[in-house]
Image (cartoon, rainbow, N blue to C red):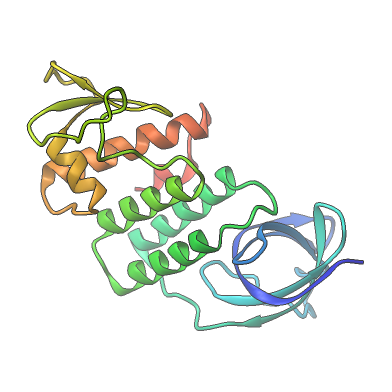
Length: 231
């Protein structure tokens, strides 16, 4: 039986399984998204009591050859991150994105670090909008859908500050003449700011939010994100 011993993970989601067990969705730094059964986790004498918590760095062991593994020992790998109010909702949003977009057992070690760092930024009270946009941008990049924010897609010329560009998912940005209120049009100056993760201006911040939603929607499909209803 294949066994993994005490590797860094975060819990993304849990749900009841049979009478007293849980199915726990883990995000592993080395092994990607892993589904495990925590036997008797809901029982009064469970060895997992209070340990399968969200936003807590842990070390987990599991075993099994099938898609659904059996959870073994777990240990704390740091202090639980204290997220409250809007930062907590943002954490739920991160988890839902990872649950929806990560394939099972597809490693993303850099994304794991981005996730950890983003949770730490939320705990410290860093600007929420900037933390969200930065994580979304890095998520798209790690999944192979990085946004080509510096060059026009057709001619490969450098994005110009005073030009407008239309965003076409999975293709890039195309120069356009219109400055109408089309939600797919972006000012070049905002695209440059987003590429440098400079979200200080209202224009860049609003454009970044709109752009990330467009890019993520093409991957998420028609099913809405439940966590977006929280904030």
